[in-house]
Image (cartoon, rainbow, N blue to C red; front, side, top):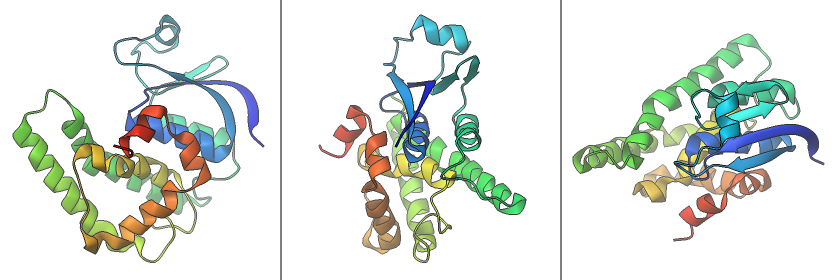
Length: 207
């Protein structure tokens, strides 16, 4: 049963940073109001609580948070079941480091590919780097059901929006990436993941 509350989540319907927050909300069963914001149409209420007008933004009564990893950790602490971060400090630090590496190694490439201002040569190189990097880490998905973990974590919540967008990014993983492809198939079929998708995101894999 979902948790009723006064949460509002301002979210871009096709942005992978917004998607990761919606995955956390869905996994927690939190009944937040999702306010989809189209590019160039920032509502005044969002600007009131977030001086940058950036997405995603979470509003919980008098609190406004507007950085995806900050939002995700807040939600994990605010709604502790199911936990999406390890209990012990060393394991938590390792999870944070993995999130940082996803951000640094992969999110930048995704953002470059999707940025209409990027030059085509830069996009081609970014696609090559992302495909090779994901293929290279694929064996890490062979032994455990989640990314280096027996349980779903915030690391998965950061990674899955990127993997969902591979077709949109023009990337097809090779057969040797089977452990990663199997991971994608398992996670995309989860009820919570399906509930996290916007209409725009559903369209990404139906074309």
